[in-house]
Image (cartoon, rainbow, N blue to C red; front, side, top):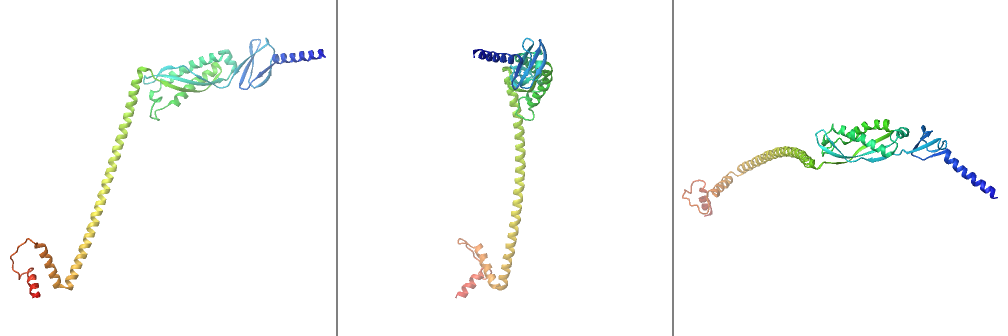
Length: 296
């Protein structure tokens, strides 16, 4: 019984040792380079178990090929308009060709140093073709940050793939700062730009106000002209109707009309303080004597 137990344990241990010696378990997202007698022989890319010869015949180098995000150090550069800026850049990359990566850089730390050097150099070259306003501006039409990042990526992606076996999928400017001696000049420039926009908006406002006032004055003139026209029409209509009424009254009662008109004239000419010495037998005062005579 002990013999069989020992035999099973020995076979189990032998199986474990054989598995570790002859099988390469490759996790998801990883790649491996198998070196045969020190020379790279093949690349393992598919996850799962792969056969290999035991060490020292074969040796395996594993690489995590998932995306990595690396933040570069702050670096100072000059724009086309000679403004110094300090930039912090992020890089999204992964190991594309593990064999080239192993032969050229070997480790992730070395690869990130190399990639940072490429990005810093390309960043200086690209920003030399753009002004500061293309990085920081309140005018959306002047901002070209996405274009700048795209050109930096275009400049470094091919070289990183060929030289280091690394695939750079994205390069972006994460933070921007200014040297202390440039801050005042930059703020002055920004204030001047805002002043230009303010002056433009004020001029447009004054022009719009002038147009509105002109339209208002024209409308008022039209309304006044229409009111005067309507008033004249109403007055003319009233005068015509009054004339017709007077004519009709004169036609129906000529003597009464003359009497009434004489009274109206007297009312306008005579008040309580007026003294007149006139003949009473002449119009329109003859009405008084005629009235008195009639009453007697």
